[in-house]
Amino acid sequence: MSLAIRTPPHIVRRTTAGWPAQMNGLLLGRLPERLFNPMAAVMARLEIPDLRPYGIARPAEGLKTRLRTGRYVPLQDVGIVRDVVARRVRPVAAVTGFDENSVRLADGTSVQPDVVIAATGYGTGLSDLFEDPSLLDDTGVPLVHGGAPARPGLYFVGYDVTLGGMLRQAAIESRRVARAAAPHQPRNGR
Picture 1 (tube, rainbow, N blue to C red):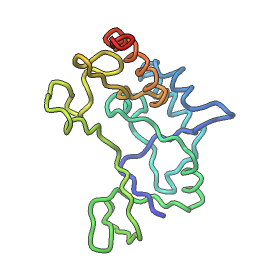
Picture 2 (picture 1 turned 30 degrees about the vertical axis):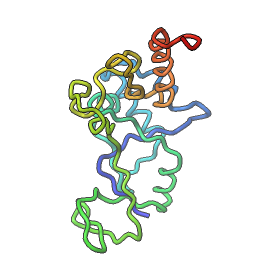
Picture 3 (picture 1 turned 180 degrees about the vertical axis):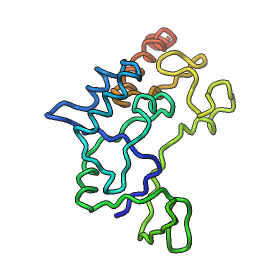
Picture 4 (picture 1 turned 45 degrees about the horizontal axis):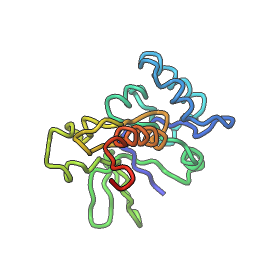
């Protein structure tokens, strides 16, 4: 199996000695980039083997910086590192295009896969739903989200990218929305 990599990922262990990576994000996530980035780099060197010999470079940009500038969260390792080291997964250069029977790669080579699965990240898709450009920033993220109404009766949840876990954050924001919306709901069928 080949894995095309566009940008070197930050990889963290899902758990270390029973301690979930998300707890590190919760406990350390408020540190400034100048402290957090070097700490995350040291943790990565201690926890994740050097994958450069296998074709996965270490990221040049710090984890917290990438979170702030690109809404990027690290990849939690649930077996990909083991599979790369065991050579069950072969990292290859980024995809630049397709021919009839092959995939062209950024390093000038090509591969002839049986199947191509494109997992290229995701956008919000909100620009297609709302014609009001004042609701969203240039990347399609709601300007107001996480609890306050963007418009009367319109709330956006799940757009705060956090090192503490996206589902956890969405649950926190959902409770905020429920509290904010509650006074506007009819009581007992009135």
